[in-house]
Image 1 (tube, rainbow, N blue to C red):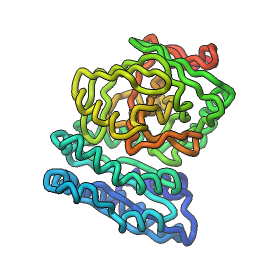
Image 2: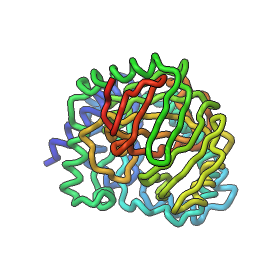
Image 3: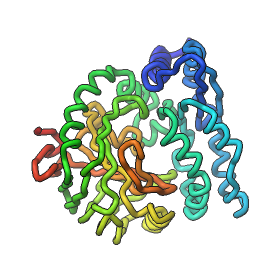
Length: 356
């Protein structure tokens, strides 16, 4: 007998998040075979909606094998079949079900960067041209990463996903109005004083249509506008690698100084992936105060109410962004203890709580 919470999540993903209609082609990607219960429920819901499902289930170990054994010509090979698949679907469900969160810890960061560039057209096709939604399926690895039992993590996950998303939407529209009228955002906190222009950019409220769970309002800052410094007191995780104590200094939009207390070489390598890797692609403000526990998972952590996240790399075109890069790395800044956000000099958040 299937878990009714899994059934509810699948229903939300297909009928609320993606709003699949008759005749649409839906790609269901799962990062491992552990996601089987949710994959099956999603598959059922696509068929009930009249759609045409295609399923890709990976074995997590394959990624590590690839990076350990692939020659340079294999790293640089463009997967034409995957690109054809991406162009042929209407929407995509990405389900992450990690068996080992540290699987790529010892992989050469240059190889990851090289492969990211090759796969960029496929990512662009899906991220900017298709409807998509991303979610987790509970696994022991994800639970261990958050210092929870599997049962506790299941409650944590479903408590954040199976909620009234229309109510969330109503609250986020208030913040959107403030940002849409604004020109300059200033973020202040520990070792942080950073300003950026948002003039002419559109704030996008997120209420369960792409990420699950959700709860943020984001936009793409003007590319050459970031000035100042920021310190990330929470771990920044990318491609399975954890970077601690990141300090970034911006001038004319570009990261001109970067350091980290742990995995600094990886940080620099990712920033140097390409020309756009040192510019901001996103400013997001977390609005989900139901997520209080930092889980080392950006899908949850960037939504924590009282935090902001700034992504280096690729921006979102639907938010007015123009920065192009093979990377998009969200880094989270906690503002709940002494932090503040200003829009055009007006205080809109203090100590993690909105005050507009």
